[in-house]
Image 1 (cartoon, rainbow, N blue to C red):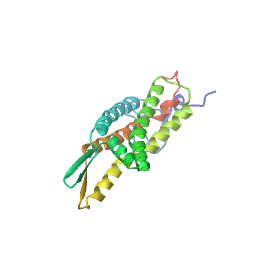
Image 2: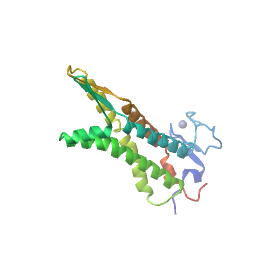
Image 3: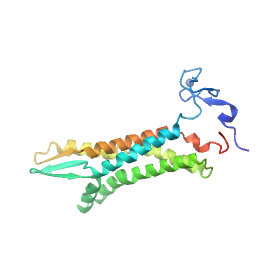
Image 4: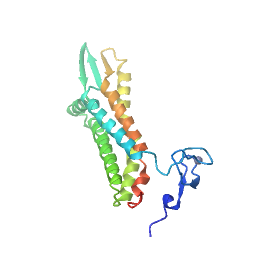
Length: 205
Ligand SMILES: [Zn+2]
């Protein structure tokens, strides 16, 4: 026998104070205790997650195609993109730094796009297989979000440090702003996804 679900029991928990009350009868229903908007699932969860994910993927192109920083030395300026930076570090023998940047700026964002896309597709199709694994995947996406600003921090830190050097100068370029936007949009997309959709009954609604 499947466990009782809040929707089936006709109740909903408040997102703010966790008070369980009668399921909202309309979109404007509010929690009787704290007055927060009451809804059994995040409103328009899938469409908002999808829209923000599309925006993140769109911004990912200029984040990789535009230079993220400009290095000037003796009047000679070189612009570098994320990938050319990875290659430069690799060729200089700094393979560990190259690997960290490659994982943080290429592997993790792409893995998050795929994970969110997969979660949305399977909840839309009301798949019942691997629910626990998909919940774990969602938690991993949320957890990684906190560490995704690593690249933006590295560029900011390097620019701040090298600014004091009289011989050289490093300036941030538009690519890094786009990369920051990708990270923010992906985090927002993940926050709009309601993981309870994974556990909803296929025959419900
Ligand atoms: Zn409440």
